Amino acid sequence: MTKEKKQKKQVNGSFDLSDKDEYSHDWEEFPQFHNESWYFNFIDRPNNVFLITRLSYHMDKKKSLVLVLLIIDGKARVYFQEIPLEKMPVNWEIDKKVKYYCIKPMKQWRIKFNNSKVDLDINLDGRFPIFNSAEGTDPLSFLKEDYTKAELVFAQMHYEQPMIATGTLILKKKGDVIETRNIKALGQRDHSWGIREWAGIDSWNWVSAQFEDGTINFYKAEALGEVKQDGIIYSKGADNIKIENIEVTTKTKENEKTPVSSTFIITDENGKKRTIESKTIFSQYLPLPSEKGLTEIYEQVAVFTCDGKEGDGISEYLSSTRN
Image 1 (cartoon, rainbow, N blue to C red):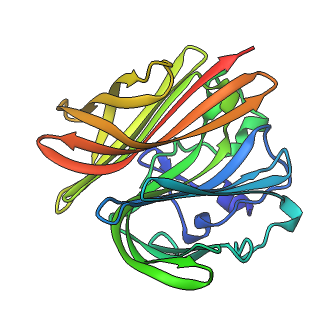
Image 2 (image 1 turned 180 degrees about the horizontal axis):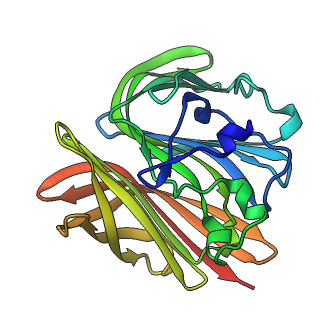
């Protein structure tokens, strides 16, 4: 990365992004727990097909993690690989099963996943422009400047984009095609880079709720007594509205961990409050053990209601227990 790029000027409190920011950011040194990730999802309820996938670089551990979670008719097909960074394909054609393509930076991606039973080929086109929720902090500055403890746990560059997913899912048996489902659904993607110490985060809620006329996307995280929250309301034919405050109430199963529903009361920049209800229809448990304890992530496909409208999307829930 050039010196000029490191010193990008802020626009409305955030870095001005360029097409190059869609790809990996490479420096000679990295803060501890530096993590860069690309995340994609789509929810196709009529076809009963959901996709969640994440590609991440863990620079201090010199490895990359690739996760594909494809849920068909309530059954999860899970692909997971841990790859040394020096062996990571530059073009992101991970192997014969998983391939990621940035077709048009900031606008269009393509994801292919196949195994002996499924063949998924999906285009993801931007439904709304990129929302850059970064606070304008170059991750390298964490090597030399003073920040609060919480910022050193989850401060990072981060942008989001609602997407339209179109493509095909082919179901196979012994090499023969037994069914083809045409996918047309709404989804979300994000790209972040910077510090993310999962074990240092006390709690985390991230929501991407897709409605026919817009998207509500936000996160709220707590760590070391501090709270970070941010979000945006996208609407067709109207300006985006920033979310200023988020209140969360979650109901769980009897184990008091697995979420089944949540109520989010959000307050926007104009002081208007909205209540969003989520009901989990599929939940994937993703434990992250470390020397500090156990971080538990629940990636939930959910049905959302807000202002009498129904939509769908992802409600991500995280909690940590320390030794």
